[in-house]
Image 1 (cartoon, rainbow, N blue to C red):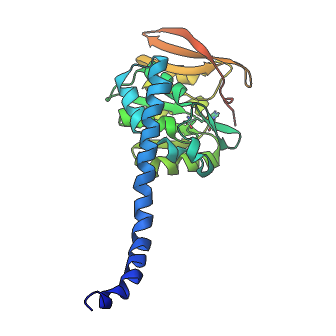
Image 2 (cartoon, protein in one colour):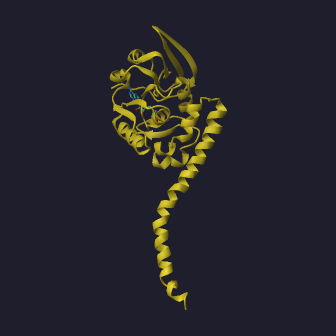
Image 3 (cartoon, rainbow, N blue to C red):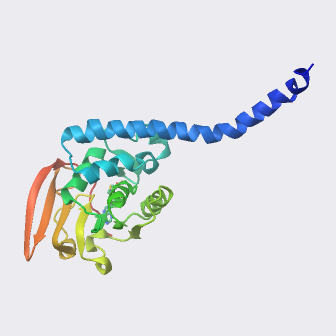
Amino acid sequence: MRNRIPACPFPFLSALALLLVLPGTALPADESQFARQRETMVRTQIERRNVTHPATLDAMSRVPRHLFVREENRDRAYSDGPLPIGHGQTISQPYIVALMTQLVDPGPGDRVLEIGTGSGYQAAVLGEILREVYTIEIVEPLYRWGSANLRSAGYDHVRVKHADGYYGWEEHAPFDAIVVTAAASSIPPPLIDQLAEGGKMIIPVGSPFRTQVLTLVRREGNDIFTEQILPVRFVPFVRQ
Ligand code: SAH
């Protein structure tokens, strides 16, 4: 008799409770799956290829890359390659993002400029390491999408501008580091001018649609040194 009375409303209530709880529980399960994939990405794609910079590894383990890819590519967010982000552009391979970050060696008090916001992922990785991050995107819809991704992933301190990155961001120069994520046929002089004393720039240099050379540029006093790092393939640096 005692059991009969609650037996009636219980299935209804539990179904209701399930409906209320399920949408909330699905997210943490996905998040922990993504966190595991991220850990594997750092160990197998990045550490194994000799990226050792602790701040870079830490940042790569934290940034939720799945929030910077298109919805239909979420299950491939942590795979070992670039992914399309629309408008003929790509989010770079995780290893390349890590390598470029390690090469400019950003410190917490530095000021960094990125050219080619795209998805916002590289800017978010930099934003994990330092407070002053500026990024410029030339394609308007990508500028809006990248900005929205950065905001919704919590990187509100990253400043985004819709402009031609060839000219840099004069009002915030000089920069301790500049990361260029599109391939230029030569190093834009305004970017060299905006590099701080002791500053470093990483930039793919070469012809569009061919293999380019990832090049590290260092300013020491009035001298500019360049070092060729490795062959890469980036989308072209476009001009308005
Ligand atoms: N850093 C991006 C990679 C995007 S691919 C990420 O993490 O997702 C390169 C980006 O550079 C593209 O979004 C492209 O539109 C942009 N780009 C190309 N030429 C540019 C220019 N002159 N100024 C600013 N952005 C440019």
